[in-house]
Structures are given as C-alpha cells and as structure tokens.
Length: 466
Image (cartoon, rainbow, N blue to C red; front, side, top):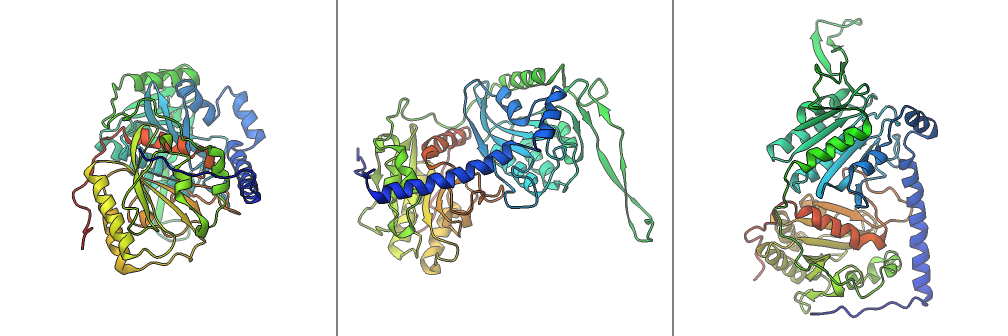
C-alpha cells in the first residue's frame, strides 16, 4: 500500500483565502440552484399544489427509496440564456426498490413544462446515460406547454428498447408534443385517473396556405383520457398511487447488475479532510497538485503511482474509491511531451487489459491557454478514443479543450465551480457543477452506476513503446 503523504496548513493565509474564494463561488451557485428549484415561481407553484399535484422533485423523492441519494444532472442548465434555469425538467440517477435508475421529471409550473433546446439536450443526455450504463429509465411526465420541438428525444428513448433497457412512464396531467409519444415508447405506462390526458399532433401536407405559399396544416387528434380507450397499462387513483405503481414496476423487473461489486466491502475513508478541497479548488494551474486531490477522495488515501520517473508532469496510477478499483490519469494543462504521451497510452492499455474504470482529472486555465502538439497529442487522442472502459471526467478550472472531452463521451462529467460562471455547464456539455467537498460521494455514485453494465476493456489501444 502506498499512502499519499500530503497535508495543508489551515492556519496559512493562502489556505484561508482560497477557502473563502471557493465558498463565495458556492454561494453564487446555490443562488442559481434556488432559481431552478423555484420552477415557474411562487404563483404557479401554489396553483399547482392547490390542484392536489406534486412538484417534480416531490415526485422524485416519493419515487426513490427512503433516505437514498439522488444524483441530479445539469440542475442549472439554461443558466444565462433566455430560458428558465433548470430547463423545465429534472433529471438524475437514484435508487428505486434497490435498483439504480435514471429519472426524468417534467416541471409543469414552468410554462406548462414547455420543451426548449436545453430541455431536449438534458433529456437526451439522461437517456444516453441510461443506455450506456444499462440503467432503467423512469419518466414522470406532465408537459403541456409549447416551445421548441424536441425531435431527438423519441429517437434516444427508442434506442433504450434496442439496448434492452426497460422504461417506465407515469403521466400525471395533460401531455402534448413529443412527450405524447412516450407511452408508446415505454415498456410500462401508468396514467393518473382524471388528470392524465394525451394529445398527439399529426402534421399533414396541404396545397397551400393563406399567403399562397406551400406549407403544412397541423391537425390534432382529440384528447385521449386515461381509461379503457387510453394507452395506460395501469390506472392510478392519484399521483401518489401512480408513483407506488412505478415502484412496483421496477421491483418486478428482476434487475441485476452486470458489472462486478466493489472489491472492498467496507472501504476506509481518506486520511485527509475533504474541507481542504475548498482551498485546492482555487489553486491556479501552475501550482495545482493532483496528488492533493486524490489524497482526499481515494479510499485510505492509497494511490499506487505508475511510472513516477517518466513524464512526471502527467500523473497516472491506481487506487480505489468506495471500494471500486479506479485508474487515475491527471493530464497537464500545457503541451504533452513525448514521454508523457507514451506513459498515458501505456496506462490506458493496462486499464483496458484489467477492465478498470478511469478518472480523468485535469486543472485547466482559461480558454485559449492550452496548447497542443499534434506529434504527441495524436497517439494519446487515438488511445483514449479506443479505450472501452468507463470514463469519468472531473474538471477543475475554466472550460477549454481536453483530451478526454475531444475523443469520447464520458459516462459522467462534472466540474468544480469557476469564478463568474456558476452555471458554466450546459446539459449538452456537462453533467453539473459540484461542491468540491462532495467529489468523493459524486464519483462513488457514478462508479456504482457504471457497474450496472458489464465493465469491459478493449484490445491494444495504441503503441506505447518505441
């Protein structure tokens, strides 16, 4: 066992300054998160409750196992845009009847649950996470608002059927647009009696329009109520009953993980305080030391470094996180030398040979600061692209090009907060901005989720010796 030897002095003025700076950023992030949780505002939330209906996060809480965690994805999507923060939908990973599931819940208090480009990106990302990680998908649907059509949502959801990933759909109210096709795309459909209604739209070509130009006339089918004539497999008496039936559906899936369980059942906690990560989050790229981060997130602060004497600017090695074996690749923010590229390719090869998930950890400067050298970068890019084991990405610093980002779609990707950009992560580019102190918990939930699918490596991912 190789224990990382690292410590920070909490009395150091630089330590206190860095901590204070990060706490201020987290306060800004919390304010943005409050906007997302507020939905359409107090008036519409009160009206929604007055009708005896639950808010999306209330529905999710009632769906999930009691006291189980919920890893919310892209909670501040659409921040800084013309659309409401949160993109009128809540997505994330939670446990239902002991089964890890992806949950998607429309927020009907925001323009009736209108779909906008960020909503579409967010739902597609959630469906993709469900597919690649083999996680059942539960849709909590109530979307009657207008907005940008989400043409790709149905396509992503239909892929789940091809991948044999089960889907459950609970319809709570009036549902139109692409969401109206969810019952047909789901394995199990539950509708709330007296509230759930589905309205489908069928565009049909016509000879012309009033101004003489060709176009389409939009004709809508009648509203289909929940009942014998509707698409429901089961009818719920109210929303709580609908969520109970959804839990029942998941329980009857007889779902089993295909990946191996944690290697260590009761892992030791890190030897260093996670509070120190607040100070490390404010470090500049030149002074950033990835070993300081690993000492505060890996089990027992145990890390076996790979080739420490070769390409020292690039850190690679092995550890465990919440009992799961993990390879770590901390890439430099500057140019990757030939020795570093060769070291990384060799490490990627070994991770795939042993079917070990990988964490890409990188501190990046402002956009435009990172240079690349195609002579050495290309083999590494090729190796990352061929790597088949699950990839997790943790970004520290401003968003910019990254080897892992350019060459594949990580299973999960999170960032620490950045000054002036509390909502930096859009649904299409990132899964969320997290409190540095929550890093170990978030990565642990991600590792558990990716092990729902079989963890398999690839053959040789590149040439790693001269």
